[in-house]
Image (cartoon, rainbow, N blue to C red; front, side):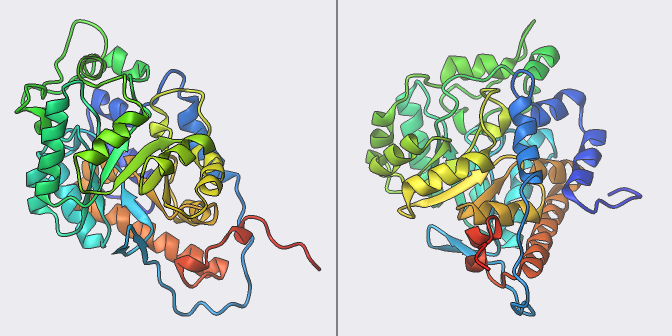
Length: 364
């Protein structure tokens, strides 16, 4: 990859930045407005200590867990991120192959540069599909049917982006897809082009033109009525919304601030996580994304109530650095760090990662 091999995910970002066009790097890396929420999500993990158990016996450790009954090698899923072919020519195909080799699953984005059928054909592991509800409900219904037919095992409905957050890097760069790339899943519906324009972000224009800002809890019921797949709701930071999601029939919740790319005054997701986890009270799986860069972070998230975490940008950095092999290295690094953190915390299994790692028993 380079004369100095990356040894952590931060190294991968620096390598990716050196290889990507400025507008592409800014699109992947940037957040909304002043990027306060973006920085806060990372900083929150750094201030959480781990109160390790001593003398437990950790010669044998197992990082595997289950999500919706599916066994995966570690509590890390690949988050849905758009436009992988901006990072590497193989795009989502490389990401899907790396996920399968790592024994985990990929969540395919509606805004992928590769059709869901082609990603499914390349995948060797399970896929979930992230969905935006379009104003054109027939296009949305058709896409859901294609997702089912392709073999995806769950739908992850994004609910925190009824309109696009103001991303000033994209405005400055007049971000758009190059002519040879498109939103492949919507080409047949005539909604696949993210075009450049004289000023502003082409993606903002695309989202505001096609994505439905009127979606409500009724649309969760509508989505469940047109699919047999379990529905997971992504973009929850409040306990009351978490309870509503369970009542609406969601099988899982992703605590997410959209990577700091929407409202630039949102809490760090690791801080919102305990409220959501307590509200659902183990009735559904709870996942979290945002700011996760170390195996340490994964263990902290599990201790605060997550079933697993989602990682987005680090996957793109690996993809930009070296395609499928780069993504594989990113996932290997995370699993190795999770394993070592579990060993040092006295946790031989994921199930043994409990809340007392963050708040030790003070009884003498």
